[in-house]
Image (cartoon, rainbow, N blue to C red; front, side):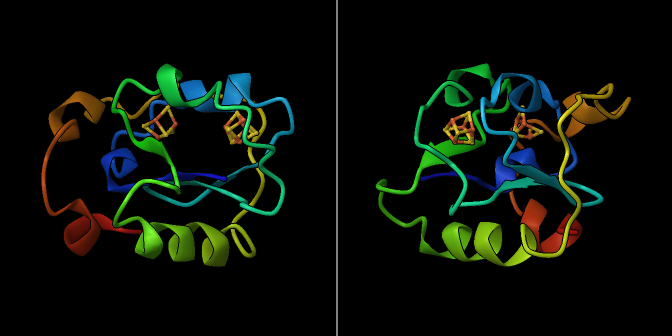
Length: 104
Ligand code: SF4
Ligand code: F3S
């Protein structure tokens, strides 16, 4: 599966939503997550994200993000149509420590 990581937090560019063939993105207040049991590993969302927030879970150190994506995709609503990114999205691009400060 692919997973959304902390780079998405407060950026939420939404480009990923439009390209997923199985509509497996779920929306929290400040980030999206992927439902790992629905993702078909097609990989098309990865290069679409301007924040480079989407990674294959085969990369090292992503266990936490697999857990976050699995857990929150069960309760957050499905999102299939992209809206505009937050007005201040670019201010949070590449910023460290977003999980601790802004995860929701
Ligand atoms: Fe959707 Fe493909 Fe991305 Fe999985 S890898 S979330 S199926 S676009
Ligand atoms: Fe987030 Fe990137 Fe999608 S910032 S909303 S994972 S395009």
